[in-house]
Length: 238
Ligand code: C5P
Image (cartoon, rainbow, N blue to C red; front, top):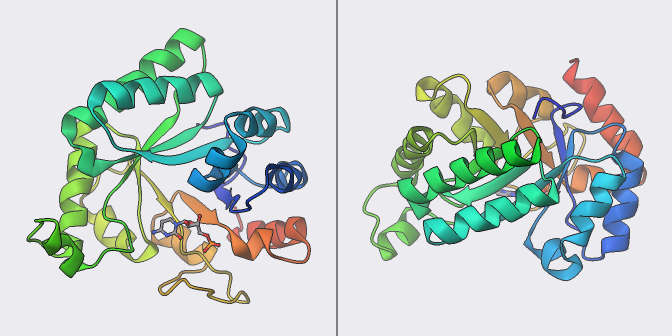
């Protein structure tokens, strides 16, 4: 994981693989990694990961695995064979599932002679509120459930969590310092919020304790994505 160039992870939320690859080629020298989500992966297939790796980009495979431990472990192994650097699992899949994912990441990377990928836990999706949790039988409020699942991910040995920028200060109070926090909801001061409701600037998010920043539209929808990424990088004063 130390191979990432810097904390900027560009969300490749574009439907067409050619557009994703073109962005990756232009941005690879100035950003840390590229996030491939379900839409791009399902439409472009694993080949998009290989092509981005060939273009010199690191890959965050955000497929949010959630299944029985054996199935998740096999999916993680396949992701390691594809040579991804970060990947996600749902913490609500439970302790044993997360342990199986982490073990699969470590063992398959070691077998392949590669650095182990960062396995990140997703806690409560930001699309869910306390009412939604109650509907699926979770009596706690969102904040308490996030903390509970974050603690479970730590016990399972995961390397980090995906969280909203506003969850970072609280999580940093009780998580081990080595736990890596990846946060979307990032907006440079001069970018529109789009549909993001609670945002921090890139520098604010790092100051709050984030390790990695997932940034989509402020980069890929900019008139010059590379210049936008370079400006954000400069604002981080690394
Ligand atoms: O374009 P924007 O910077 O808002 O993109 C943010 C990325 O992070 C998108 O891929 C979005 O799906 C993802 N994300 C998010 N909020 C979450 C979880 C993921 O914005 N809570």
